[in-house]
Each structure stands twice: as C-alpha cells, then as structure tokens.
Image 1 (tube, rainbow, N blue to C red):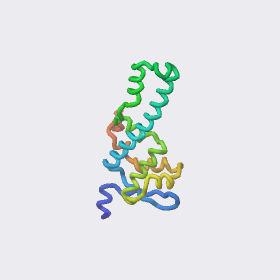
Image 2 (image 1 turned 90 degrees about the horizontal axis):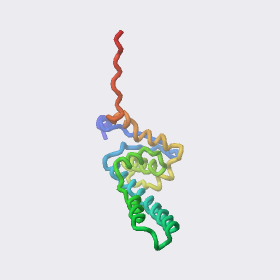
Image 3 (image 1 turned 135 degrees about the vertical axis):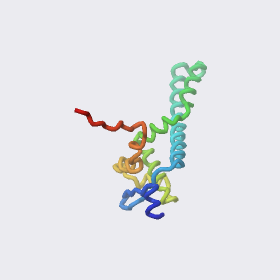
Image 4 (image 1 turned 90 degrees about the vertical axis):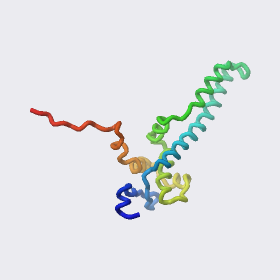
Length: 157
C-alpha cells in the first residue's frame, strides 16, 4: 500500500506480542458484524446455562411435574431475549478478556489471515488488554457525536 493511501485509511498500529511485533488494522464494518455474531454466540451459551439453572430452581420450588405454565413462559422470555445493538456496544466496552481477544484477532487478521482466535489468546498477555483496546479503539470516542463537547467561548469582560 502506498504511504499516501495508508495515511488516508489510517496507518497500521503496532503491538509487541510475545516479543514479536504485530500490526493491528482498524476494525471494518465486516469485523463489527463478526463481533455481533460473537456476542450472539456468547448470549446463546449464557442463556443455555441460565435456562438450566432457572428450570432446576423451578423444579426444586414447585416439584418436577408441577411447574406452572406462566413460570415456564417467564423462563423462556428471560432466556430468549434478542441481542440488541446496545448489548453489542456494552460488550465491546466491557473490557472482558473474551472480547479483547476477539477484537485483537479481528484486527490482526487483516495482516495475518491465517492466525486463529486460539493463537491470539495464547499470544496476548492479560496486561496488554488495555493497550490493545486503546490501540484499536483510538479516536473512536472523540469521533462519536454523542461525546462531542460544545466549543469553549471566551467570556467577555
């Protein structure tokens, strides 16, 4: 890529992982769509555990064959809630290890297409998670119109 083109789309950021320098690419819309699917997968896994825990509690409370239908509907409602855009954004900002590894993996894949999620998990040191998240998300907060501050005006005397 030419220097001027790279400057126009954003220069690659670099990070040292396990003593080797790696290039991180800014996340694309496709990367964010993959992240949304990742969040949905996490939700499905969480809901499966939650469903089992809630039905076990209901069986203990009401007896195995005596759980009222409205209790089952409530459990189903709790465990089948759709993932919203707010859920995706909340997960992206959560700082969780799973999220950091996934986002780092997507940023690395642009330059190392064969790298796997497991490999990134082994390369990334827990102390580097804030650095990776800052590198990948650098400038997003300022660019978000919701975070814009009104310009300061000088007070007249």
